[in-house]
Length: 226
Image (tube, rainbow, N blue to C red; front, side):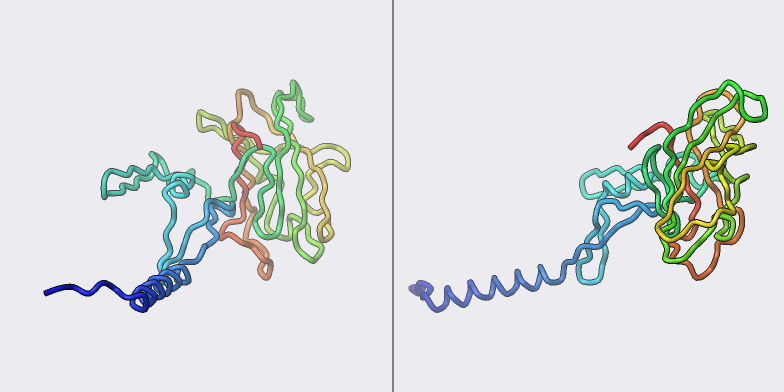
């Protein structure tokens, strides 16, 4: 039996059908913003209601990812989730971190031969900025001075013991106007090379504020700078 060659009309119909199917597929795929500890990462995509996260984003979140053929293995790094692990908005020295209420940036951590209490240690310089539309102070939102800690590679930590004796002091009761900012200095005793600064919340965070993370504490990696 002789087959008929497709006519121009049938080719047009086939072309339109393919275009229609492509349009439906594109319409069903949307880009989704993806955050790790409050920091924007590679975008995910949503296809027909199912969200797909790129492997690169999983690696950035700290997972060990191995892709072999048709198999993907995810493993938590050793020690992850332990009792010393702090869930916090994380970043590098010099990077502005944002928890929905405060923008926090550590600009310098340097060794000093003698702190205000006449002991060798470190001086921390940081900037805090109010990102809300109301006047706030750190204490009133759940942050305290004694919750600023330096961590070292050997697992030890040291806590702020004094602040700069002037307007650059880490004044947690100082009112910060909307969009206002100020630079703070504080000192901690210790020696060696600090690897992290952890700014924990002192208690329950203030309700009714636009926090964008379950735990608005800050963790700064002092081994990298941005």
